[in-house]
Image (cartoon, rainbow, N blue to C red; front, side, top):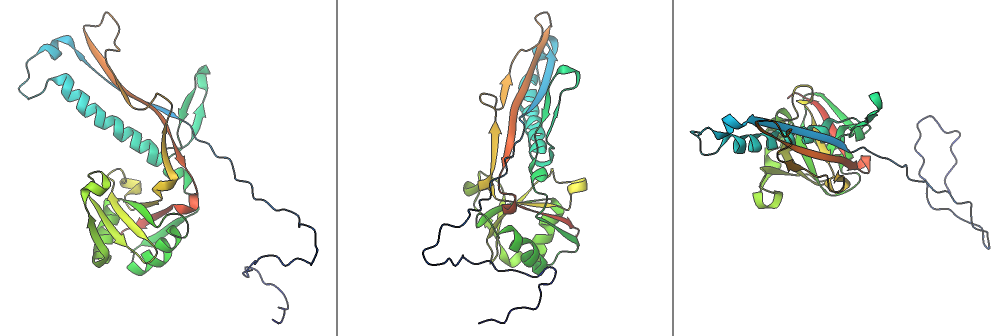
Amino acid sequence: GTTAAAALLDNDWLLIIGNAMQENSNAPTPKIGQPVKKNNFCQIIRTPFDLSATTDAEKQKTSEQERQRLTRKKGVEHRIDLERAILFGEKKEDTTGGQVRRAMGGILSFITTNVYDAGGLLTESEFETSFCEALFRYGSSRKLLLCAARVLSVLNLIAAGKLQTVPRQEVYGLQIQRYLSAHGELLLAKSNLLEKEYGNHALGLDIANITYRPLRGRDTKLKRNIQNNDVDGFMDEYITEAGLKVELEKTHAVLKNVTG
């Protein structure tokens, strides 16, 4: 009963509804969208540390020996290196010299289309209509917003009435704030690794579609005494071989260029 349009114009929207088949008809030609196969690499990250036997034998004024202190400090450095790869890594396999070196693709390398440029000042209205609307279009109704310090400051100023503190036991001891939007729930967390070039970024992540994937038997380990037998001292190292699985790009989003 609708009058047909004279002609379709560029960028006209088409609403496709279910088919209407003839009575006693044959099955229509199937149209199946095959999923695109994606892959990533497992990256080997090593953080060694050593000490002479003389230094190791010296009495320390602190409550722990130097080897114990280095073990704690280098463990933190190793986890930071792993987190940087998870966030910023770009997938690559290098076979120069006959040896294979692999780098994992990080989260940012998988989110290429759902990116919102705030262009400087971010208002609550823009955050809701341009970012949250796109972020919660697909996937879970509860997502993580990993923020640079500046973005977290801006959100605290423009949306203070919508922020709630989440009990630490709910989120593994982290300091998290909850932002309640009409589109869904955002858990706001600060990342000090989002700095300099990324100091005005925030990553909206559907954690249900992101998986840390260590190679079998190659998750983070501390290896002791890997020095040569004739060394008068020790060398230990942390080693991890792992990759990242990021699914359904449209369930994630990037917010960038937030300056105030």
